[in-house]
Image (tube, rainbow, N blue to C red; front, side, top):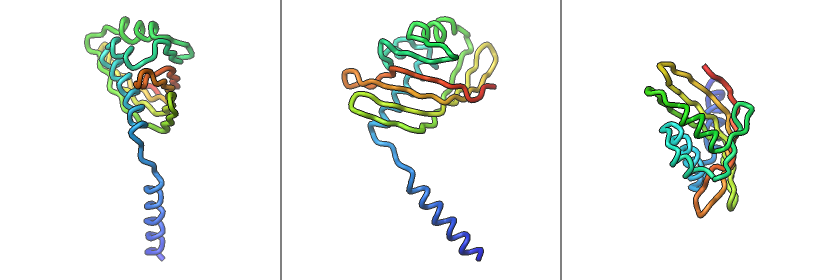
Amino acid sequence: MKKIFLLLHAILFTELLQAQQSTTKKQQDLQQTVVKLFDALSNRDSISLKAHSTADITLYEYGQVWNMDTLILKAITLNQSADFKRANTFDFINTKVDKSMALVNYHLHSAITRDGKKVIGQRLETVVLDKEKKQWKVKHLHSTIIKRS
């Protein structure tokens, strides 16, 4: 009986592994655009930030609507701590692509050190991307805080 139970679990586990879909090259490109946007935030690099965003980007943060100027002010200009470090980890949930528009959903885990204090944050985010001149750019980003410590 124990062998049958183990065999059934092995078959079920194998089926679950096969049910997972691998990502396409287009989906990976979209996900990399999101990663590069956050790399720009981590490096406090406004030029790279703009390169991976549309000119009319909107961000929905903390119950507010931000534009690029707000993002640069809050994430770069006012963030001048000498010991600033930000490390991001992504768990992509869903990546859908159409001809010139795409949607990416993911969990974001960020470890941010500033002024000697480390804050760990977990968010659920949705990004809408537009294709401009053959390059994917973030047009909208909505973020929901899941946990912060």
